[in-house]
Amino acid sequence: MGQSVINFAEYIAAARAVVSEKNANQVYGDFQVGQNYLQFTSPDECVQMVQMLFDDPGLRFRMMYNNFVYYHLYLRPDMLVLNSLIDALRFFGDIDDLAQFGSETGLPS
Image (cartoon, rainbow, N blue to C red):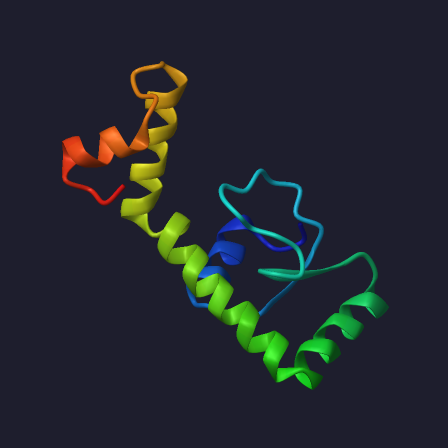
């Protein structure tokens, strides 16, 4: 990516419609091209993607909404910690059923 990963995360946290080069990073959760950002591989394609967002307010607002939801499920600091703990518990085999985890912690399952 030409921009920093931190800037990319900030754009998602701010619920922006994003146009970016191909994302080479591993991304947690349901984060997809066309749903959370538009991807380009050339300057002309970048202009086309920006024009598409400019011309289609529905697409732009859906992307902004999707990024708002994604932030609250995956990027918010408390959710980063929670998702990391759940992954660690799964990895070490200490938890098989997240419903059990939710009931033990008082978290919604």
